[in-house]
Length: 294
Image 1 (tube, rainbow, N blue to C red):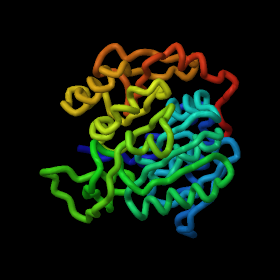
Image 2 (cartoon, one colour):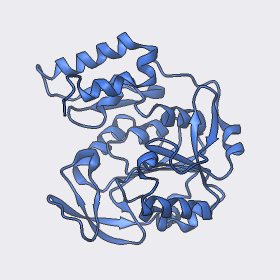
Image 3 (tube, rainbow, N blue to C red):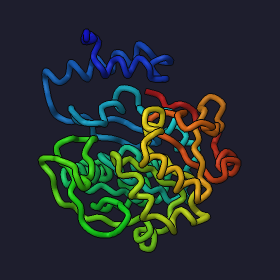
């Protein structure tokens, strides 16, 4: 098999909506970042949305934010148009805190969960950069089906995942696990939940029965890789659980500012929205929020 001479990050950029709008500017930002590493490995501060900032390091998932501001373009533009100051946003698998920062920049109460110690330090670092933006509450735990302790990998960066029975993994660490139902009793019930936990999404929802029943919860954004994983039993069980609570899968059509139901199980992208009342959600979308400038 021939290997492409084009770096993977550049191939990804070429498919991004903001590259089509600002091809020269995005290309220059990519070249600057690649060239800068020959002179320094120090982290770089960048302006983010609504006056917020991020500290970006080489070799981590936040580099995409330097290139295009909103790497998860559809999903993040939806949140910028949907979230309000009165909302409570749960960021389950917060990593270095980009989604946490985005939600806080809108004045939301944000509850961020990140169990890996060195990743939690990065999350805390970015939260401290943005003090005063919103009420941000960080919890160094994972979310699961029940309280307890589990092992998690520590050497895979944004791909760190909880180790389940039968997994063979090196460089693991025991971490504490809570449930979203327990969390809601002390932090308040969420109006929106983002879940990115590398294959542990079903277990997170199994510990969220009361949260899913709550009328306060308007939607979820879950990393599913639906087109390639739709036949996986865990994804089917996840969507059955959500369906039992009235939540159906949707995609957000940015240009039209509307939601479109995913009518077949293989449709969608790597991330999937789930809504119970799409008309209610669409009625909240702020049409005045435009594409952020890079």
